[in-house]
Image (tube, rainbow, N blue to C red; front, side):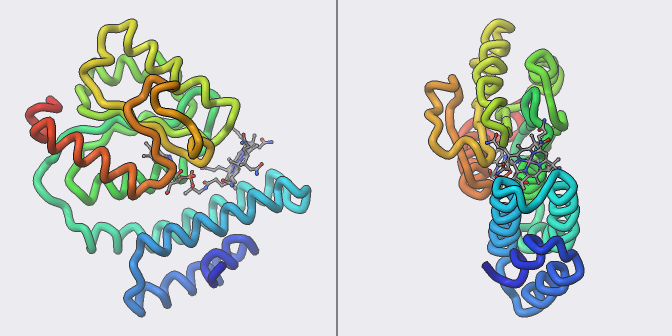
Length: 217
Ligand code: B12
């Protein structure tokens, strides 16, 4: 753990933000800082599991994380710049799950690479994904979940797209802390990513392959 993750694990926003500012001034890669902040949240999760932290601490930790992300995100945009439109991505956290910090990182990374994003938010039921695919016409659908209990919703959502005749119009990627060992085929998805950067690379490759904005509508 470093100073940023220590600050987050200790729920100390001032310490975490001071460490982020100092690291950014030293020229540290903002993506590395996001990864370190995530380690801090993992530690918070472990303390929650151990009964040392309770829900109130989880909530506070997510606020501290967001404060650090607010400092890091502009640097990501500065570094990667915003290019020509490369296509559209629809993203949301599946039904039953309200975790969205990881999804927000994916959004920032896509946004600064010129992707048009529609974010459906959290606890998104399959019909809402279906309606948005129909209306927005994305090339890629990204679904996020952190709760083990929400994992079946990946497949249920894909099946709703199949039933609506829309499955073949999109590539589907799933992500989030719980998906590391999951098999894409089992979820009827095209790819499983446990890391935002790797997932974004896959999405960009799909969009570029499809010819960017035109092919993705
Ligand atoms: C912060 C947090 C919360 C916050 C969430 C705030 C928010 N706005 O998101 C709050 C307090 C609301 C919360 C609530 C709950 N939480 Co919670 N939470 C966490 C915690 C500490 C951190 C999660 C996090 O944001 N990590 C940081 C982000 C950056 O990581 P990430 O989401 O994995 O995302 C990365 C990648 O996965 C990827 N990614 C994510 N999504 C996507 C999508 C795509 C398309 C791609 C390509 C990539 C991608 O990109 C990110 C960067 O690389 C975790 C602990 C942990 N170890 O993760 C527990 C944890 C996830 N929570 C847990 C639980 C149990 C709950 C509650 C049920 C608690 C309760 N008793 O009420 C509720 C759930 C309510 C619900 N219905 O969803 C458990 C889940 C256990 C399980 N396996 O099911 C965990 C693991 C804690 C624990 N160890 O027990 N939680």
